[in-house]
Image 1 (cartoon, rainbow, N blue to C red):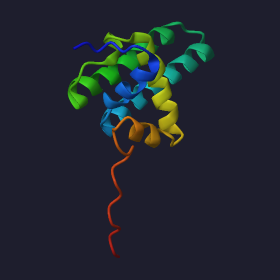
Image 2: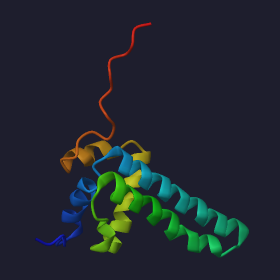
Image 3: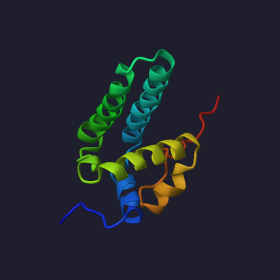
Image 4: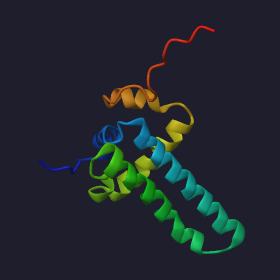
Length: 121
């Protein structure tokens, strides 16, 4: 069976399923945030080395998440552009608290673990 998806509408739920663990998404968020920081540093300082650091930050944290947390193959190997678009989409939905419904539609479940009962003081 192939991992190739016919279109982006089919790919997006697959992408979320491949990022089912909150720790995986968290590591992606760290890497993506550092991508933005490196981009800002490139603009502010005029140093092009920060542009070169952008993919390193993004891929390092993502691949650590896939190989050691999620234990799957990064989607970027089969769909590089859709994967990049989806990373930013997941990031902005996650940062604005709107990822939960997307995860539910993809069959992943809640964005955060269920709340526990408060401890009585």
